[in-house]
Picture 1 (tube, rainbow, N blue to C red):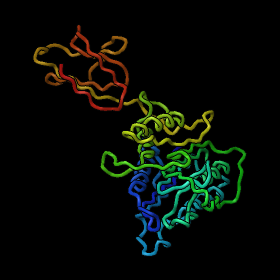
Picture 2: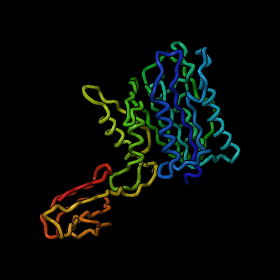
Picture 3: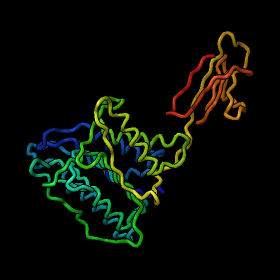
Picture 4: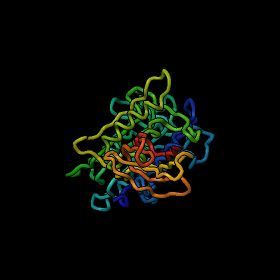
Amino acid sequence: MAAEDRAIVVGINRYPALLRDLEGPENDARAFEEWLLSPTGGAVPKDHVRRILSSDFKKESDPRRAQPTAEKLKDAIDELHDLGTNNDGKAGQRLYIFMAGHGIAPKLRTAALLMANAARGRTGHHIQGPPYADWFVEAGFFKEVVLFMDCCRENSRLTPLQPCHLDERKAREPARYFYGLATQFGKAARERPGEDTLKRGIFTTALLVGLRQGPRGGGNVTGSWLRGFVFNYMNKLVAGPEKPQKPKFDYDPDDDIVFLTLDPPIFPVRIRAGSSGQGRKVTIRNKDFDEVPHSAYSDGLWQWELGPGFYQYGYSGGPWYDLPLDGEVQQYDVRL
């Protein structure tokens, strides 16, 4: 199914005519592309992903010539438009659109990515995400349309609104959709250093943790589940007295999307017998008190690979110690 998926991924760091450049959008775009291409993630073919980054273009001395412009993004959109038009209205199974950079919200229910040549007084250099996603939903070129935008949505009512440039097209059966915007109307989006010290948007960070980790017991990563996870995870990323950054989602819970299905996580567990337990068997039992066979043993070190659940460990006959496995996957090392 993913062999028919397509994606447009945009990350803009450089804004020579605005107040400041950003550090996170390219990192976010590269990380999202990595998930898209991963066989355990989106599994989208590499030649089906159109990536547009600031670093793809040379720095211009004239801010008005800064790249990428709206025309670069429109070209990628036109490519998908022509693909569907020339193929009886069929362009693929799922379309992903990811945008990260400076952003504004010219109206309550939309978000616009400012392009590199935007400036104060020239915020008309932008691309609105939702209207383009809506076009593909209504045209039915794809069965599913996913839009993620990691950018600010600060109120910019004086901005001349740039509409979708494609002619209207309505399919008998519109696409299933899932839209995620980094923040609420009138609010800013934030960057934070990740574990690798690179700046990243906290919305994209939470989004990718959810898509990679999935529900604790494995299974379907649905839009409804992802929405709840991102809300909760973003709260963890905002420390101290800061107000939380609340994302905005739009989807039909009665026609929910399934991003992917993940196998249950596996927890490596190693238990080493203490000096008082030499010659005794170390045992793990499940919630039904049935013994779980170990996967390896060597020189007093017992090893298991366990799925999520509640277990107890100890020497045969007890005493028993609780071992709940229901968090993020890690290796458990225990000494009796």
